[in-house]
Image (cartoon, rainbow, N blue to C red):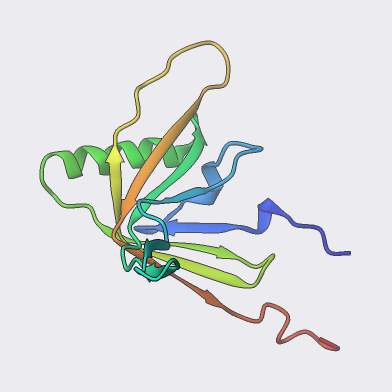
Length: 146
C-alpha cells in the first residue's frame, strides 16, 4: 500500500519554494468562492443543475514564523501594498496523486497579523486567485516495470 507523503508536495509562486516553510502537520487549503453546481426548480416538479463558471477562491498556507519564506512573503506583500501589483500563477505539484494545480492570477489577500513570543509561532498566509486548473501527469512513467 502506498503511503501519502506531504513531504513530496511542491508549492511555487514567484520563484519562492513555499513548501520549504510550511509548518509541520499543516495542509495547503484551497477554498472556492462559489459552489461548482447549483440547482433551480424547472417548473415541472424537478430541478435543473446549473454549472457555475466562477472558479475563483482563496488558498491558505501556514508557515513557521522563523522561515525565510515568511520574510520574503512579507517583502512581496509590502511591494504589492504600495502598488507594484505582485500577481503570478501559484503552482502546487502533488506526485502522491499524480497531479499539479495552477492557481491563476494569485496574489496575497491580506498581510497576516504579526505574532511575537518565545515559542515557535506559525503564520497563516492567504492568497486570492482568479481561477484554477488541475492537470494529471503520470509520475511513474519513467520507472522500470511501471
